[in-house]
Length: 535
Image (cartoon, rainbow, N blue to C red):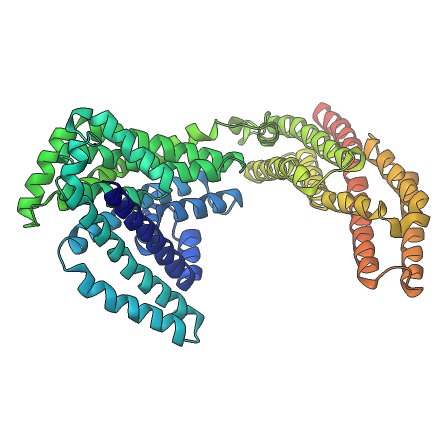
């Protein structure tokens, strides 16, 4: 009994190694094309589903595709609706492993095929000088080891079936929930649903467990595959956590439906097996069952992708995301710009307040890191874009000149604030440089510069004198930095970096000082509009 357990574990270890080699080899050989497909073939939920299916079928690892998709969502390169389509397709693509196991692993003498493939794969990897061919060789060797590991699993489980049953380790009396739990735990522990499926299929083919219990274990393995997404999203952005939640909910719904209609699905599997003239063995039946319930789940969820994405979008809301949402822009006012201008003004006040808050954080908070600033900057950027887009949608027919002037002022101020937001990180970097020991003699000048910028940021109206003071200190710091570079008191790279940051902060103060004219401009325009309307 103990030797059989070790044989099963050895076969599983070889299988996992093979999956790793296949995934890495194929992913590296076709990495650029796969990334392009994932980034550009996902315009609609249906195309995203097809992309997820194809990529997972190629790399044979749904977890790798899920993690890559979370990375795209993290970077803002893919929307939540698009990424959900990829997840649906990835679930279908992972069924390819079951078909490989059932059709090739149990239909041929594995060693006769696997050993020549292993030799060819290792030979290509060692002899070829082309990196892509080396990766293909690694994938081919992994493909061969896949079947060798499967052969060991198959032999071990077939020979020990009676021993496992007599020892009470496996029993049909456990019921469907127990086998679902076994499938789930096997996937979570190995972090590979393919490995769990291989164990279930070989156990069923060896007569160790009946077909209905094996089907329940397949459902459990499908649920366990969400653990990869859940783990990778623990410290990720809110959107990534939403995608992981969507993956878990999708697999839960799919698994629940499959479990509820399990007798009917097994009957359909038997009918399709006869109609397609497939081998009537448990491995093929389970592969077909795995495919059917994943296709059924994707077919049921695909039409609801957009509502599902909206539901997920309401989860894990951060303060920054709430700030990024416009509060006053009403789409019903788009056709009446004279009324919409009031809503725009209210939103502009929010935008200026949030921008002011961002700059204060960059100036005042100690030990501030760039990642701490980015969420707030992204929220302001999104709000700025929402205001700009709303103004662009206002109807221009017969628009009063005062409204045209007000909207022009708002657009111009949005541009100033957008650039100030982009440059805010340079304040953090300049403060970090100023704290270095190399700038000890310049510390008072830097502190003076930051104090002037604080005063400018706190100002509620244009402050030309403060701007002139900032300009004078900027030139003082620039000249002092150049002088120390010439004297070689610090490296040229450090000096160049300091000059770049100084220039960026100077540009920031310039854009912010221009944005401060918004309130004066609105007051003047309001007075002008009142006079024009009363005349």
